[in-house]
Image (cartoon, rainbow, N blue to C red):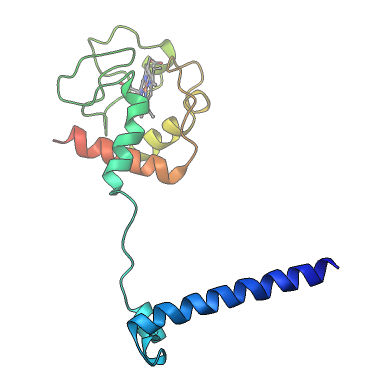
Amino acid sequence: MKTHKALFLFSFISILSISACQESSDKTSPSGENTVTTPEKITTKPVEATEPPKVDRGARLFKRCGTCHTLDKDGRHKVGPNLYGIFGAKAAAKADFPRYSKAMKESGIIWTDENLAEYTKNPREFMPGNGMTFAGIRNDEDIQLLLEYMRSKTSE
Ligand code: HEC
């Protein structure tokens, strides 16, 4: 019984849509057949980018760091140190930042791209005992976009 009902409904909808189609194709073209677009025409159309530019994504990600860090030259220290010139710098190099942990000061780390990426991914695992209370960003692509954004800002 159920199938009958469904079949009935289906044919009813089909009839509705067929008549709707006919109506609209009547308006656009009398023959109806010439309105079919060839596949080549569809596939060669460039796909519009709907994603915002990547820098925007990096900027948005940095907002999570921005509660504690500034990036601009001579920017003030917040809960964390100003990060201007961080790429290639020694860890704990901002002499006037008063709250570096012992772990950070004694780490001997140079902030290479790799180290920054690892630290951002999981601060506690990368440097046990460090004082940055941030859970980390797990997505590698996000980290790369964030670092690109940071680099573009600290070299301005
Ligand atoms: C809740 C505050 C907070 C947030 C959020 C935070 N940080 Fe930090 N960050 C700190 C603190 C505090 C330190 C100093 C840690 C220490 O000395 O052990 C630090 C240190 C650092 C350092 C080392 C600085 C130096 O001079 O050696 C880097 C690099 C860094 N943070 C990057 C980031 C990035 C990137 C983000 C965002 C993904 C982020 N931080 C989010 C508080 C924060």
